Image 1: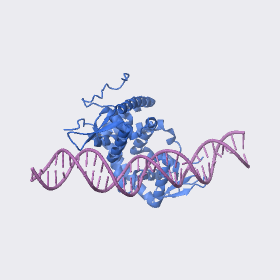
Image 2: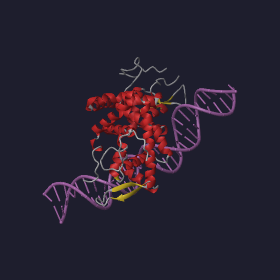
Image 3: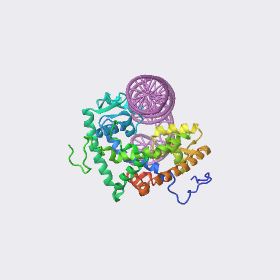
Length: 169
Length: 169
DNA sequence: CCAAATTATATGAATTTTCATACTTATTGC
DNA sequence: GCAATAAGTATGAAAATTCATATAATTTGG
């Protein structure tokens, strides 16, 4: 049913029958792969009572405790005003604390509580295991090539992300 | 704690400025790379008065007009009830039309209007150009390797995505 | 052919998210 | 040292999103 007749200049219709634009579009592949790869683990995160952005915050603080809101937002892929509210919720739940930075009183630094750190460490451990399992599934070395390629893309597109280790200066 | 680590030995004691967990975590690299790579083009999309999910819908309909809501949702990475509302908004704006499927009256098929198709074609052209520019930026062949690796990951994690070309049957 | 299970879409209501902007503190240029 | 500008965070209000579930149509098994 429904022969595609209304398409005036459809050049890939008919015989090739496959791959349109979307299925081979880099930005789509990135978004879809990210979604698909994360789906399972995100279920695990929610099972621990956290939403994905909250997990991202905990994971980053695990690496660098005392991060300021703005940078935490950039890194965690969360818009600033949204992160502010998320941090407040997390503080209410006893996962983090907020402290004004004494040397720059505009800044608010976020620290893990003991509870927060426990959860963060547990989930980071789980995440490492999950990542290993995922990479192991991808035979043929595709998995091995993927991380460096993504890191390169990221470095090219958003150089600021790396470097900055020092909050002040 | 957690002695068994194949990863590069690093502590989160935080002084040497080395990679912590997050910066080398596959799921993070995927999400961050997706964000970073899409940022520019998404600005372009919004400049055309569309939100990102709407662009995804148009792009998919460009490839396969008359898709049903559920599948459009899966492919466009949008939750179903949200897509229903987005489609209604898009219909109100004259970008798509909804038609009940006569052979399965539960289904609603979404079609591009002439206006919708015009915009879709324009943006697909722009997206192709943007992708080329992006890949060209990534010297060293990383760019070339990226798409196949992502496609493989996707195929492994979500096999259903590919195959299905026939709505009925 | 019927009852039960499944699939497809829509919708109410609570929660989240966004956007613009206010507010406070710091920095820059003169 | 001061005005102008920038940086960091918070917040109100509008809009979007989620979650659970309703409704309707189809399929399945007996």
